Amino acid sequence: MARRPANLCDALEALVGALYLDGGLESVWTRLEPWFAREAETILAAESYLDAKSRFQEWVQAETGITPTYRIVGDSGPDHAKTFIAQVLLGERVVGEGVGSSKRAAEQAAAQAALAALGDG
Image (cartoon, rainbow, N blue to C red; front, top):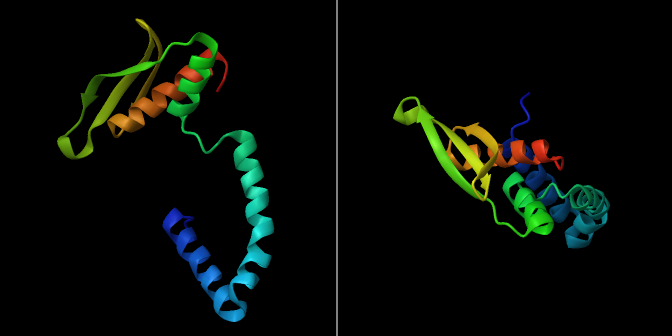
């Protein structure tokens, strides 16, 4: 079975609902809080709640004080299935390039490439 996020969300919602109907809010909290606490620690430690653009911007501003800029430098494909190419720049210097099925995805890929190239990804 595919692990689609929507299916996982539906399953979690059903679990929470069943726990609530069976034992009330206290039952939900008692059973799920330890799991959520562990997951929250992992997420916070890895800063995985931040997307690549956010991580890159925070890192660059802390190191240099410069705000990165993004530009779309190309696209290809039919309108219903376009692919975009984005670059991330520090000043005039291109530090990463990425490809994605949307402008946002291409910018995320460019930021991830820049993080990897500059040693923080």
